[in-house]
Figure 1 (tube, rainbow, N blue to C red):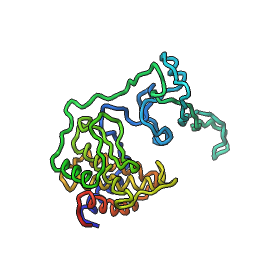
Figure 2: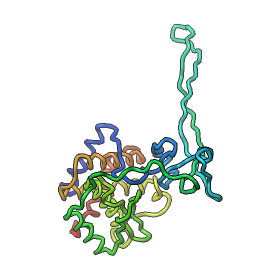
Figure 3: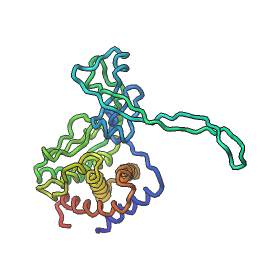
Figure 4: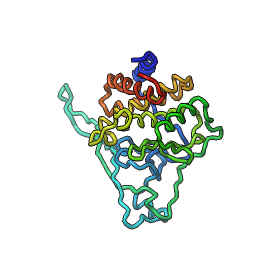
Amino acid sequence: MNKIYEEVTDQIIAMLEQGQIPWRKPWAGTEAGAISYNTGKPYSLLNQILLQVPGEYITFNQCKEKGGSVKKGAKGKRVYFWKLYRKTETETDENGNEVEVTKTIPVLKSFTVFNIEDCEGITPKWQDKLPEVPAQPIEEAERVLTDYVTREGITLENQLISGKAYYSPAFDKIVTPRIDQFESSAEYYSTAFHEAVHSTGHPKRLNRLTTGKSAAFGGEDYSKEELCAEIGSACILHRMGIDTPESFRNSAAYVQGWLRALKDDKQLIIGAASRAEKAVAYIMNEEV
């Protein structure tokens, strides 16, 4: 593996070994994934997977209390959470004495929520403000990204305020939020090149993307592809010299999140870096 990929990979692993790294959404102006309308807090990773569509979610009763209504035919989705109950029991200690012991018992609860897009009379209340000093284009990064999508005939949509960043294999299209939704240029290009790495997996390119259950959101192949895309993006920024400690830390946090779906097997980073090296070479129009 090329030295630069080993360097980035080693740095990511070193950061992961320091413990939990909080991931943050790098763009503003939209909701942070799926969040609670009531509290403004993002749902857990499990519930993000179940809800899939970003936006604010509200229960039927909360919607009614706010003077709104759920649209006819709209279907809610279940979310799950643990509620902790305290219970005091009498037990016998090692000396044969009866003692009272308080235990905390987790109980799994669930309820149904609706995206406010499926409600009437309710408007979003947790939208971020755009950065006062927005990110600016970087000439070299723009050149590489534009050259790649032009050469490959990929559609790049990055001119609308958006809360989504993704690559669509069906339409061979990369979508990102607008650059002025980011405070950091590095974070914008990290996002854009992440999706560009995904696009190299198209069957007419490196033929890396799979189909089936494992390729669905949260599946093993999906998780491995996310590792590949984030490591590839980090390597591109590192090569250009436009990465920052903050952007690198956020990349490591993203990698850590997907590693949990793969049982924290850090060896998978090595395989992902190898695939990322081929993807980056494809984007840069180089030989591996």
